[in-house]
Length: 233
Image (cartoon, rainbow, N blue to C red):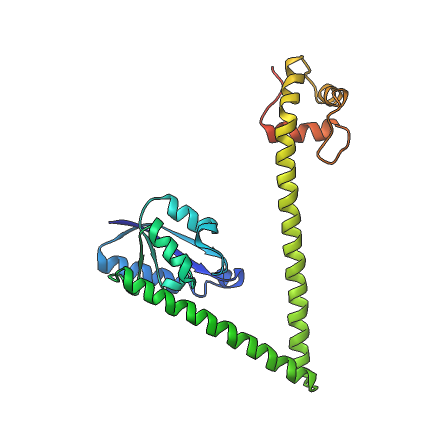
């Protein structure tokens, strides 16, 4: 039976170091040999388990193959029972550490995985609270750790904000491209054959760039490349 593998770690740092990924691949390959499965491809990504499987780029590719998906452990799919239950309705998957588990058993292990996530979250909160208390009591080492966490959190928030801004800009540009495309084609139909003449044509039609400015040969060239059109030879 042909299958695809899926491995996941929660952070890019873990992905770069290979920690966790190699062990997962080994679990999958061992189970495949024992069960007579043919692993055609292994999809790998660094993404939080709190993200729904269907929203993960690499997992979506695995689903698109139409083949059963094998993971090392069920928590690599998700620690959320609702996620697991939803997947059971959409795709066949196998767990390397329990390859012969039936649906009821998989549900049970999903419940245990979700409970473990809750335990981990509580332990983390307790540890951070204790760290903050030691820092407040004057522990220099704890104060340094709190500061590093705060600085790292600030960097992460800034990066997230930048990614969100870039996403908004891409959506905005795509929408603008859809709006401006007919006017570009109209200008080309009218016989314009240079970047400058196309700029003049769009400006004469009162059509502006996505930022509200006038068209120039440089911005028109970028637009044509994005639209996949060029002057007739």
